[in-house]
Image (cartoon, rainbow, N blue to C red):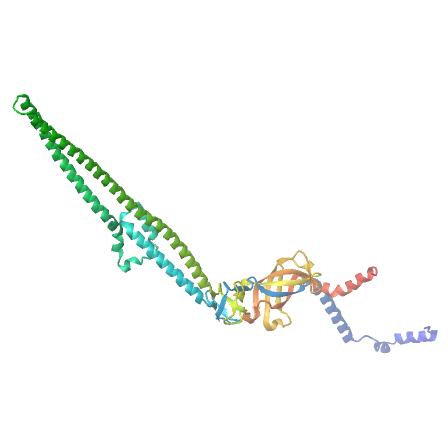
Length: 446
């Protein structure tokens, strides 16, 4: 637009007029307002340049316990007799969970106990029959082995009869031995008397020979004396033979007696050892069956919460190893951890040891509270979950700020996790949109 000389001259005159120019001056209030706005902007820029805020990396997590679900399984095949727990119940170690029918096992246990009673009776019966005849070392060793075996013989009152068994068997041989010994003694006495008689007859024969030589006695008398002496010597030889036979018979009877005694003791010793082995085996079978019987009362191995009952009810047939119910061990803060999934594009910011806070996903943290903790394990590689590439991490809880721990601290609770990945100046957030578009504008179009 072009102005004429007259128009320009008129404007100059108006400008020189003080009264008229006052009407075109800027109001003071506007100047003050403008100054305040400029001061606020400058102050905000300075504060944004000086102050830092936490750099938060968003993620999602699941509250878990280190003690996973524990399946309680049927020890053996059997019928379910009763189920003593329900889902959600708290159980202590040793509490009965499920009871199986044990009628058949009880009958087997009775049979094993009867077998043990029979063996123990046989063991003590054989021992008492040879106890008094054993050497001290053998007797001591046997008594030490029998110390743990019940003695049903003493209460029955026939121990004395058993102790006399071998003595009664040897009594007839001892009686025969005494008869032979008496006969042997009589033969020895007869031989001594016969020897004395023979000696006298020798003296008479010598006297008769002297008298015959003197002509006083006849030769027939001498011959008669010689025949008598020969007859006595024959009797002496017969007695010697009888004595030898008696001695042989006596020795034979001693051997027979010792053999009867040794066979009696040896037979029972061998039988005792076999019975002791059988008793030990029967005890092992009984103990094994008793353990199986006790296992049919399924008990809680630790303090836990019944998470799920899988057995349907009474009279159900369960195979050995089938799951009966699931227990979740009781836990406290130290047992809890958070399984965190973080998008791969944010994982570059996160390192072990960083702090985080977590709250219930989809809920206001002010309603239920927060968990605080530190990052522990960070996976080295990513994986695809539901079409999204993520990194897995674990978080250790260090502080609980929750209103109701019993309801909040439930394994499986989904959480919104905010990981503190350092600090950043506030002005960086203000200028990020501009710098982002500025970098885009300076790059080549893709």
